[in-house]
Image: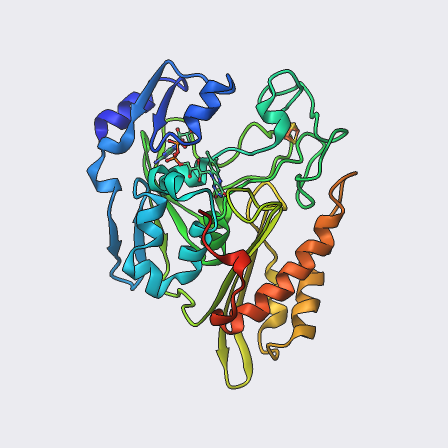
Length: 328
Ligand SMILES: Cc1cc2nc3c(=O)[nH]c(=O)nc-3n(C[C@H](O)[C@H](O)[C@H](O)COP(=O)(O)OP(=O)(O)OC[C@H]3O[C@@H](n4cnc5c(N)ncnc54)[C@H](O)[C@@H]3O)c2cc1C
Ligand code: SF4
């Protein structure tokens, strides 16, 4: 492991490769280059899924998305995570893609992939072709005048709802970041997707003991029902008691530069009856600050409806609709 860390730390041009499903594409498009690829799959301790003494579960950064989604402890205790992972990519890609790579994947903004257009994320200071361009898939929350891209992961939306923690190893030692602090908003540094420092590696992701196995749902809305990124996705988890909702978690994907959670909406639902009218009010709170662009205003209403529908489905996970089925 020290070898891999030392090599990553030589320069920014030494890049870690895990499953390669995003990095190699980026290299083929001349968006990322690398003096040397460091195969981090050689770090055995980053592959495990293991129970933690506090009742939580540790997911190795190098465990594949498929191994994670189908692991018996994930399926039984964190079905929301299993469902979100299976809504992403395809079976073949999930067999290669790793958990660490999923957190680190880059945006799918069309202009980011087109080196003939300005893009502050790809080339800082060059401008943003999406703001005045075709911005149907772009963000409606947390945007800046420099970038309106969305973070495309499904898995990370569930990890945000579950209050996961990211374990990091680096030249200055080990550290942890709460999931909410891992990904960044674009601000005036859109080239930075997250708060991982140069030379650091994600070693694992911890799930707290609370997994919401009774009341959960992941809904992904997209242009095709398979092999497509989310226009809007929602991860919902509830704890219910005799008097109503005792705990609520709602995270959105496809609407911002990071998974989007609005704590006020979750607090609003605490103690309320689990009924449509309350879910509609929570959706209004979540979308309160949304700012649309020319082609993506539809996302505001889509997100509100997705939240309400997903909250209803979370009450009885058996009612989940085909849109939430695995992507093949
Ligand atoms: C056609 C296609 C469709 C897809 N659809 C979806 C989808 O619907 N939903 C979805 O969520 N995802 C989707 N994906 C993205 C896929 O989930 C990611 O490509 C994958 O998770 C990346 O993991 P990887 O191991 O292959 O990463 P790599 O490609 O190996 O690496 C990606 C980045 O992560 C860095 N990295 C890797 N491991 C670590 C680590 N341990 N610590 C620090 N940095 C690390 C690499 O240096 C690189 O910068 C799709 C991908 C493709 C190609
Ligand atoms: S939205 Fe972000 S990623 Fe897309 S062109 Fe603008 S700066 Fe680049």
